[in-house]
Length: 75
Image (cartoon, rainbow, N blue to C red; front, side, top):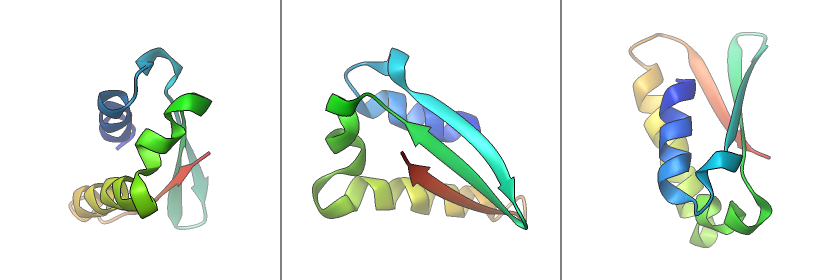
């Protein structure tokens, strides 16, 4: 799942070298933290959070095959 989020984020930003993805376990939910450069934050979030919501939707759909819960946080 990390690779999926990293690929999506790197496709959106101007500086893909500053994309960092970290995974942490929090009970039964796996939290994926996405860090990007400050100037690329708007591109990852999108207008009214539409792109961030789309990323979370894709992760939720992909995680249904693994029977695990994932949460994406943009830091």
